[in-house]
Structure formats: structure tokens, C-alpha cells
Length: 101
Image (cartoon, rainbow, N blue to C red):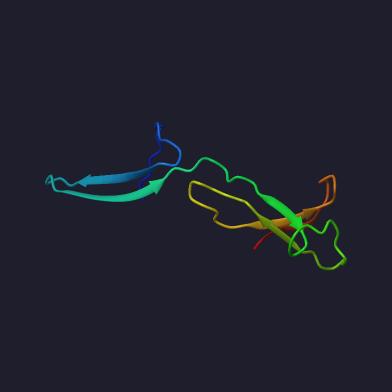
């Protein structure tokens, strides 16, 4: 597998066609291409609430944690997945490791 990296002037949120052309000793040519999109803009953050709906401002269990969120948005490639976690109030201790949902 051959690789190359080069500097370009690609634009965020644009689709490009990456093409590779190969020529043999007899001058015969084959090409292949792959479309790709540039996305260098982070998703926009939404709102996170404790509880399964609305915002409760409390949890009534020491063994179960519930949350809901909305308003997250990504205009480029869209949201791929969400992860959730929990920390103490000053974010010095993580009490729940990031987990895919």
C-alpha cells in the first residue's frame, strides 16, 4: 500500500474526488477514485439535563443515573454518536467513564 501526504487548500464542508492513476511500462492506464468530504468544524453543543425528561436538578438514587439531551447539531457530516459521562461538581473526579449511547 502506497501513501502520500501533501498540503492543499481544501475547504471545510466541501466534497472532493480523490483520484489515483497508474501507468504500466506499456503506457496502459487505469484510474480509480473515491469521494470524500472535509469536516474540520466541531459539532454545536446542545443542552444536557439530568433525569429522563426535562431537567430535574436532582437524582433520587445513588446507584442509577439518568440524563437526556437535545439541540446538538453538525452541519458537516452529521452526528456520528453520543457518549455520556459524569464528574463531580468541579470536574476534578470522573465518577462515570465516557460510554457510547
